[in-house]
Image 1 (cartoon, helix red, strand yellow):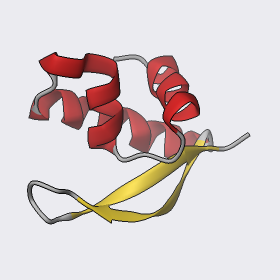
Image 2 (image 1 turned 90 degrees about the vertical axis):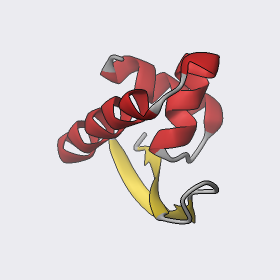
Image 3 (image 1 turned 120 degrees about the vertical axis):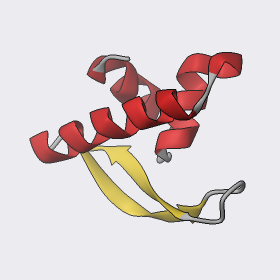
Image 4 (image 1 turned 180 degrees about the vertical axis):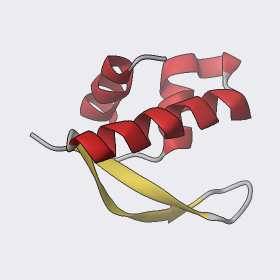
Length: 73
């Protein structure tokens, strides 16, 4: 999963969590390792100033709050 895939997904989906992005990119092949990879890419993009956190949404499965990211244009 490349950074450009993450950015393109965020542009298509709008503000999203790492899980939502991973599901958008990988569809039925989604799993937690894919989610973890998306999250790692998002952290890098956040440090580089390409995305920002805009809130939190509770994960429907775990109930844990997940950051919501959007592209900085």
